[in-house]
Length: 420
Image (cartoon, rainbow, N blue to C red; front, side):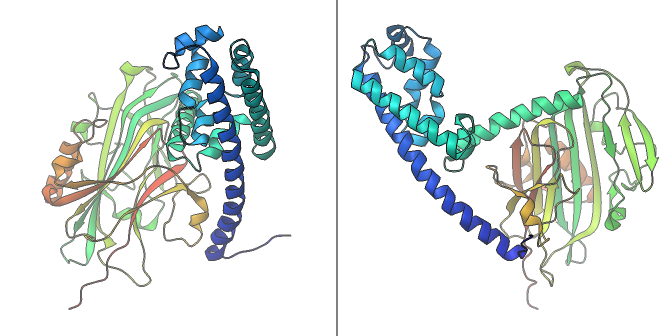
């Protein structure tokens, strides 16, 4: 039987049910974790060694200092969940307790041993084992969640880079919004690029696709004055900000798009290149709220494994001045482009720890270490369009080890039009 729910009520019902189950598990985990942490503190107190010296403590137990160092650090946490996330797993704890029987009180060791067994059983029956602990605990521990996400995102990056045979240091996209001549619309410029792009295998193919599938993509004009929907034989790079000599592409045209395959087969850091492009769109967005209201968004979509993704919205001081941006992450493996105005896209949202940083006003504040000449790029594009970069204010989402197939979105709600 299929149960249907409306987009408005589906999230509420699922959230209420999950919250109830999570609260119950949270209480039991914290109880078991506290018992284990406190019992281990007793055992540690019995060992005749200075607890500030992991090496001395390990020597007293005659085991490796790496495992004792983790234990001594873990039991200092006030939060019991944080403590068990930091300490060795059950096998390591049993090794410590077996060694501690020679110099600690019997009742202390037995209490700790029972606590290990009880927590291990709870983890096995409720969440699938000790190895899943970090994933569950990250729901309640912001610091643990950041470490958990970073560790696994780095692993995904390494795996995908080796499978794809290529990677990059940084991918970036900057959306620049400026009032048009009518005062009713917002002209837009997009500056995008890939820094430190390189092959890990000579046979790896790296391909970029032109725009052209969407109806409004015909509005996109490269800074060089070429339609971004069909740039022909030349990928529309900003030459002064891309690698020298300029990278060459083989063009493969199919239906309404051109596909640009990077030539060459060099590998390693010495073969790394930088690609930077920019285009403009006249009257791209409404300056004021429409009926029905629609959110305005800029997207950052990593196209290949990279160490860093930078998504900027740089807005003229008069463009949506009092609006507060929201960061939304989408799983886009099922479709190409996320839509913050879709009543159903919320089911594809990803909950992450990244945030939006306000950069302040003036182009000098927009620099970022991963992108050489970034401020100069913005100045160059603004000069081409007759825009004043000192009147721009900036918002940034900086993601370490972004996941290919996850789209970052900075969304704004335009204000109502002023009354005449």
